[in-house]
Amino acid sequence: MQTVEIIGAIIGLVYLYLEFKASKWLWPVGVVMPVVYIWIFFQSKFYADMGVNIYYLFASIYGWIHWNRHKKSELEELPITHTPKKYILPLTVFGILLFAFIAFILARFTDSPVPYGDSLTTALSILGMWLLAQKYVEQWWFWFAINIVSCGLYIWKGLHTTSILFAIYSVISVFGYFKWKKMMHNQSQPTIASVSSSTENPAK
View 1 (cartoon, rainbow, N blue to C red):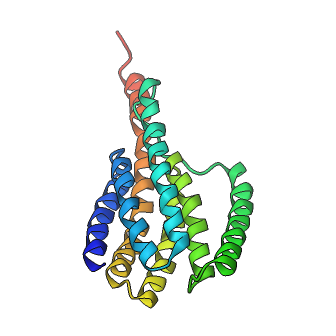
View 2 (view 1 turned 135 degrees about the vertical axis):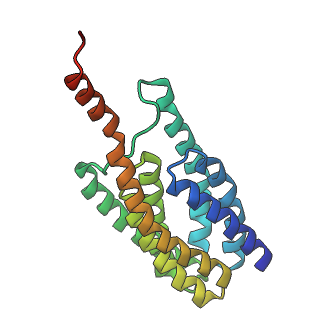
C-alpha cells in the first residue's frame, strides 16, 4: 500500500504543478492519477473518495476537451475568469444536497468510518473539479478546504504519505489562487498595451 501511495503522491505533485501553471497538460495526468487513488481509497474503505476519483477520470477527459476547444476560436486558450455570480446560489444548493445524499448513502449502506467527513470532501471535490474545468479562479478556495479536511482524515486513517501530500496541497492552494489571479490580470495587459501603443504612435 505504501508503495502505491508514494506513486500516487508523485503523480499528484506533478498534477498540482501543472494546475498551478494553468497548463492544459494537467488533464492527461488527471486521467492517470484517479486510477491509482481508486485502488488506495478502496483498500482504505474511503468509498466516497473512491467514487469521486471515478468522476475525476471522466472530468479530466471533459477538461482536456473544453480547454482545447478554444484553439478553434479566436482565443488562443480558455481564459482564467471569476465564477459568474449567477452560479453561486445554484452551486451552494447543489453542494448541500450532494453532501446530504452522499452522507446518507455512506452512513446507511457502507462501513465507512468517517461518512460525514468523506461526504464533505467528496461534494466539494465534485464542485471544485467543475470549477477547474471552467478555469474559474475560485476553484482554489474549494481545493484549500478539501485539502485541509482530507489531511486530517488521512492522518486519522493512517495514510501518512497521502496526508503529507494533502498538507502540501493545502499550502500550494493558497499560492495557486494568487498565481491564477496574477495570470488573469496579465491576460488583459496585451490588449491594453496594444491600445496604448496605437494611441501614442498613430500611423503617419
